[in-house]
Image (cartoon, rainbow, N blue to C red):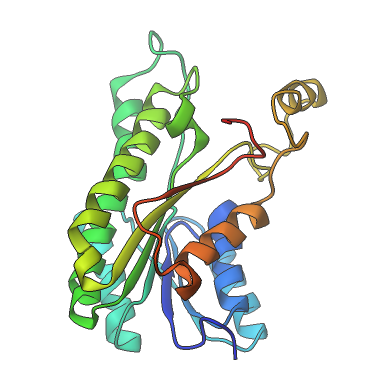
Length: 248
């Protein structure tokens, strides 16, 4: 029996990258995991199968969590299927990078809606059921870009900084009901989106990281699982930076 053996968890944007790693880690630790996706059913079902192969329950659920309807449907599916929701990991996100003079308004709006609005919508729906149970863990996947800022990412940095402010405000609102709200802020992490970067770029970035390497999705998943666990019961409103010392 794992540490999460009786916990029901939702991970948004869990079909690939960091979200996939978090879903697999929570499943490995015994949680029943709802694997949310929007456009990659095959990848989401693969995650479900991997979790089930480890002996725990999982299901995939398609929802655009940047919409109120999608977010509400996702939370409702968890509660209707399993009777409760213990853990929500707000990971769904996207990028539309460009310098501000070249960035289109719709690129700003899309990133804010996908990254920040989805976090607000899913948390609002989840808090309703968590408050009744007087228990909950919400972990928001922010970014080092939201801590330090990053050129060419005014939209993304704003969305991720917004998630940090949201985390602290919501933590204050729901603490009396036994719900903790925290964030992880990954630094440079190797994913499908970054693995093909030219070696010279990777090496240059490594020079700025005290630990001398990029992070892995598992580095972020381990940190997220900690904040979602009972071991972190007295931690709320915190931003756990997982960046190899980059922002130090």
